[in-house]
Image 1 (cartoon, rainbow, N blue to C red):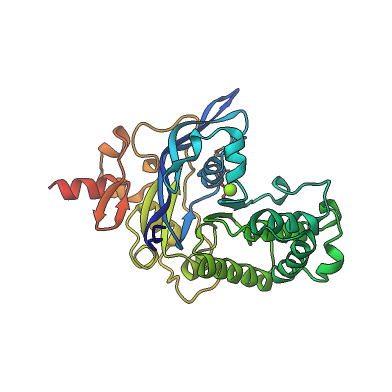
Image 2 (spheres, helix red, strand yellow; image 1 turned 120 degrees about the vertical axis):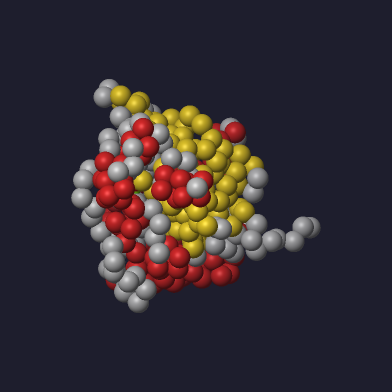
Length: 335
Ligand SMILES: Nc1ncnc2c1ncn2[C@@H]1O[C@H](COP(=O)(O)OP(=O)(O)OP(=O)(O)O)[C@@H](O)[C@H]1O
Ligand SMILES: [Mg+2]
């Protein structure tokens, strides 16, 4: 058997393009996204509402429905392209090698089955436990995710649970299979602070015990600072900056990231949300010709940079390990 490299990439997303074909036109929700996630790494994905975070995660799991379509790219899990699998092969990967905590919990629960049995089944399938053992583990996991009186709740159907409880059941299911990759889309936003801390601990433990890689989507910069090693910043369907978490917070390079983070020190502050930047995100139906952030970019105005509105910048390695989609850095390095 080959030895597992701690730094080996477990998930590589390359040139992912996902579009929605609507009556108004084509929505370019995800437009050429590249991500590399290593084993055991927790990576943040941040950006304003509507920038394409959820669509990216759903595309990785191939859960894009009409009018949406993944039109380009590769999603390599352990070198195997998920986009090239047939539907039954893909179904075998989902909730097994790769699982997701959804922003909308209702997406993944089966409303015809009791929740204890649903979680228990994950243990039965993945760890070959008996039904009885599976349900026992399910109840323990329900307790871990903060569900009070789990023995009783295990025999409830999803519709009998409150939204917060259903969210926790979904989290338990996503963790139970000990996936290689966990996509966590705003996993704790709907939950109170104590439960939130408990869930984040569970994600950390999962990483520590099974070397699971995690993509954590959140608006909460405190959570990013606390949990993530690296961060991708997304704007209008594209990655605009990628950096180690300390570098990003101490010295954001992209004017968009600078705007989101503001001048407030992040470390040590538990619940710092992204700031609001003046101006509007471009409609993803009519993407601008130049840089997508140009209309809101103070630096472009200050420096009177014409190229920003005429040519789209590529992601550019401004410093070793730091990538930024901004003409300023590309031009500086060319000088
Ligand atoms: N079913 C759909 N039909 C048409 N457009 C869609 C559909 N789903 C998503 N979009 C569009 O795709 C873009 C990206 O949406 P997405 O849900 O990924 O944003 P997000 O970054 O997750 O935002 P939030 O932080 O609010 O969760 C948005 O412009 C959205 O309107
Ligand atoms: Mg979302």
